[in-house]
Each structure stands twice: as C-alpha cells, then as structure tokens.
Length: 256
Image 1 (spheres, rainbow, N blue to C red):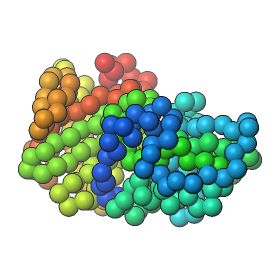
Image 2 (cartoon, one colour):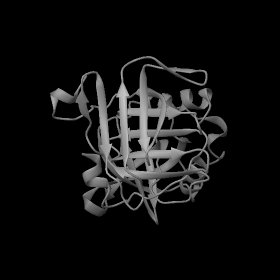
Image 3 (spheres, rainbow, N blue to C red):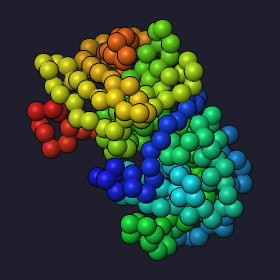
Image 4 (cartoon, rainbow, N blue to C red):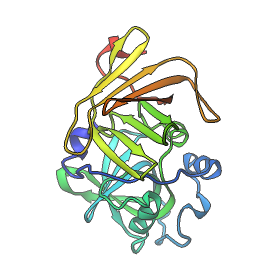
C-alpha cells in the first residue's frame, strides 16, 4: 500500500551509497533510544507530556518530508519543529547522497496536527531520537517489511535492497558510490529459487536476481540465501538476508 500513496508525493530518484551504522547505533535505534553520535545533540524542541513516538523510514523531496510508520502501516507528512535539525541530520544519515527520497531509519517524538497533501496526517517532530542509514540488521530488528537485502564483494562491493513497501529495488555500487532505482516487480518461484526479472530503464540497467535458500558466504559474513545478479551480461555472486516482507502479497504460490 505504501508505494501507491507515497510515490506521487515523494518521487524516487538516483542515489549514492553511504556507510552503515555500527551495531551499538543499530541496537539503540531499533529499541527507539538515542543513537549517540548518530544525531546532533540538542536537536529537540519543547516536548509535550503527551508526545507520541514513531519509528520507520523518512525521506525528503524538496521541501516535503515523508514518513513510513511500520508499527501501524501508515504514511505521514513530517513538519520539523526542531529548528531544522530533522533535515540537517537526515542529510548526514544519507551522505554522500544528495538526491531526493533516499530513505533513512528514524525514530521521532512529537504529535499529530492536521492533514496535508493526499489527506495524509501531519506529524510535528519535536525530538529526534535516532536518524540512521539503513542496513539489513537494523531493518529486520525494526520490523521494516523488506523482502531481501543482497550483498556481494567481487569484483567490487555491491548491495541490493528489494522492498515492495518502499516500491522498489535499489542497487548500490560501492566501487563508485552510485546507485539506481527500479520499480518493484514480484518474484517468480522456480523450484527452490526466487527470480526477479527487472526491466531496464533510463535510470537502471535490466537485472536478473536469483535467490536460493542455501548457505552462502561473502568475505567473512554468512548468509542463509545465495544471490546471483546478472547485469549487462555479467554475473555477480553474493549472499542475501531475508526480511520479514511477503515475497508476493496475495499470491501464496510465491511465498515461503
């Protein structure tokens, strides 16, 4: 449901890679606690005794700030009541990316006040509890319903996030710090293999992503799934982390 409501408000675009938070930051963020150096100290407005806390993914496009709350499967527009700290720390979380709608994991405190575009509720942020770049461990612990996070190391570092709730398949190339976005497509189940056939576009090459539930190792990290990425006629191999998201909502033949 997220992609049908959110994309008209916040258009997806190209993005660049960034570093993942360390385990301490990720654990704190998943618990809804302050993540230490992940945000600038003092990014707080006066708190209300009835402040509400939300956790999910935020993004920016121009002067619009959007939020996906995975606790109740809702979309919000954000209003920064901290004097600019939300945008400032969001940009730090996604650096060196400067393009619109790169998502970051966020925990905010504040209150709801009115509605905005597309009748989405407006959440006024009075305090930033955490604002961090995404990684699969953090996404899993926070219950973000992505399907797979794939990673490879040879001949260069790359990763792919496959997320129907975010409406896309995100390919990142850590060799040159660039990435591309492809609209989400459902997988096809072939035996014990799930295959995503992603058509090419002006912003991304055509991709074939094959995922098999079998042990794989990339560098020193172990995975429950192996991943094979075919791009521009070249095959790359890596491992994948399974997220909590449905592989193909409404189609039991494509679910585990």
